[in-house]
Amino acid sequence: GTASAKIIDVGGGGLSHRNIIINGAMNVSQRGTSFTSLGSEYTVDRFRYTENIDTGVVTVTQESITDLPGFTKAAKINCTTAEAGVPSKAGSKFAAFNTKLEGQDLQQLAYGTSSAKQITLSFYVKSNVTGTFCVSLYKGDQTARNVSLGYTINSANTWERKTLTFPADTGGGGIDNDNGSGLEIYWVVARQQGYQGATSTTWGNNTDARFANLCTATIFENTNDHIMFTGVQLEVGDTATSFEHRSFGDELLRCQRYYYVHAKGDNKVVGVSVGYQANDIFLMIYPKVEMRTTPSLEQATGTNYYRAYNNGGYDMFDSWGSLWNTHERMISINANSSHGVSSNGGQPQMIITSQSGASLAFSAEL
Image 1 (tube, rainbow, N blue to C red):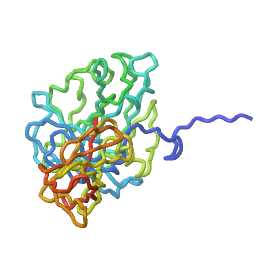
Image 2 (cartoon, rainbow, N blue to C red):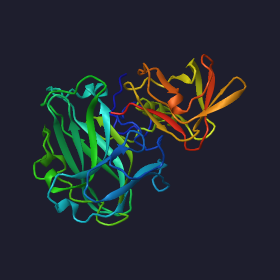
Image 3 (cartoon, helix red, strand yellow):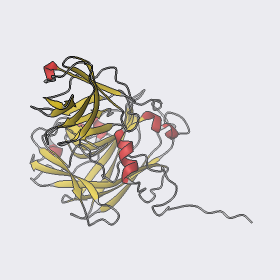
C-alpha cells in the first residue's frame, strides 16, 4: 500500500536543519552576559545591537528565564537613559537588534529568479511596551533591497510568539554565493521619521523610507522600558514550524565560526609558544572550527596578564602583538619585548593567563 501525509508541525523533533538562524535560543554568549556603552556591536553570539539614536541608551543582557516552557535564556534590551518621542522626530536614526546570515547559506532561497521562495520568521517576544514594532530584512548583494513587516505586542510583560512570512524576492539580482553578508535581519525597537513613509511589505530597492515604515512603538520613552527575544527561527516556506532546539555544543560550534574565545580568566592554558629569538615568541592556535574568514585579534591586556614558563621558571608579559600569516584554520600571534616578553631565544614555553581580566579571542564576524 501507499501512505501519504502532510507534515504541518514537527513538534520540536525531526526534520533537522530547518532553522537558518544561529543561536536563536540565545543560549551562547561567549563575550559575557551584560553589555553597556553600546553603539553597534555584538552581544549574545550572532546578535548585534545597532543604533545611532540621539540620547537614548540601553543595556543588553543575556537573561535566565523560567516563564517560557522550553527556553532558559533570552536577550533583553533595557532602556537606561530615556529619549522621549523618537518615532515623531525628523531624521534618519534608529535602534535595532539584528543578525547577519552568510550568502552561501541562503542559495536555496533563489532570490533574483522566478523560483525565489518565501521565508517565514518566527520568534518569542516580551515587553512592557505594547504597540507595533517591525522586523526589516536587508539584502546588500548586487542591487540593495529591503522589506519590512510589522508585528504587535498585545499584552505587556507576556511572552507572545510572532510569525512573519516575507514574500519571495524575484528582482534586484540574487544573493552572492560567498561568505559575505547575504541577508540581514533587524528587529527595530525605535526609529525616526526618515525610516517611515513608503510601502514596505513587498521587496523593493533599498531606501530609508521603506526600512521601518510600520514601526510606531519605541522602548526609549521611559527608563526601564525593555524588550526581550528568544526562540528565533527562519525557515523556507510560508509556514512556521515549532522551534528547532539544538544542543548547546552544536550551537557553540556554529557560533565559533564567527567568534572564538580561546582563553578567559586567570590560570587558563593558552598554548605552547616557539621562541623565535631572545624576547620574541610566536604562539600557534588551532580554532575549534574553520572560521568564516581570517580573524582579527581581540584581547584584554594589562600588567602581567600572561605568564611564560620555561627553563625551570617563568616570565611575565602584558599583551600580544600582531597576527602573523594567520588564516581561517590556523592562527599565529607574536609577542616580543615591546609587550613585556623576556625569554631565552629558541626555547618552547608554556603560556597561561595570569590575571582574572585576561582574555584572548578571535573575531570573523560579518
